[in-house]
Image (cartoon, rainbow, N blue to C red):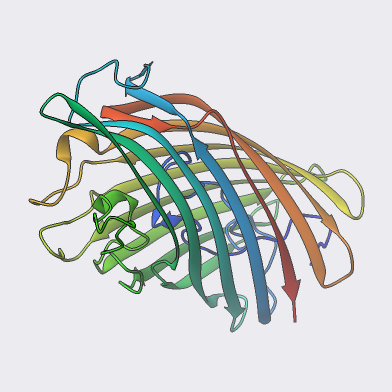
Length: 315
């Protein structure tokens, strides 16, 4: 195994989150899946802890950035700050079969202005809660070509472990999209391919699909589609650089407690990153994520950038 490359974790989310949504919605879309990147095939376990920061301060209508209240609506969105802490355990049974389990802890602040009969009422929420846990199994096949490569598949489930009824100090329940959990059980599926590039690192591509299998309290999140394209380059025996393109498409939410006219969108991000091997078993990594294109339904909050940092320990 090459320890020079960033150690990844199969979050089938992480993100997530996943609960995985576009960066600027809830969770970062960065691919931190070491298996899909072709770096980890030996039997054994890995524990990964990571932190994400996403500050949504830019209201957007379609692809256009707008000011707060520029487009009249029932709620004028002001800001959402997401601080996500994600713990993941990943295990390879052998070179083909593996599984992962992850759970996020969500610290979120949200502000908006409620327009009620000509009166503007500021409203705010802050909560620190566990989010929805994920369990994913995978299978990968080593391909016999002129260069090391693999094709893999994943299948999993998101469980409704996070609360979906958080209220603020005034007893007002947060919008369902802001809640730490969706209240639904979701199916997760993915496919990935990776290939070594003649002493120049690895290229990888991964596609994922997430869909709710049920609804909860008249709410069902929209389907989510993810596509990641990345390149990882070992700069030294300990330091690796990485660049990714992350595309996300999310359909609108459904149900009487959903906001179909203010949910869903299309996103494309550029994500540079770096990792460093502190020891043979412990590595740290970090990524920044910048939007190249953001198109949202209605008016939604987006971010100008996002960041994540983590550590991965193999045992």
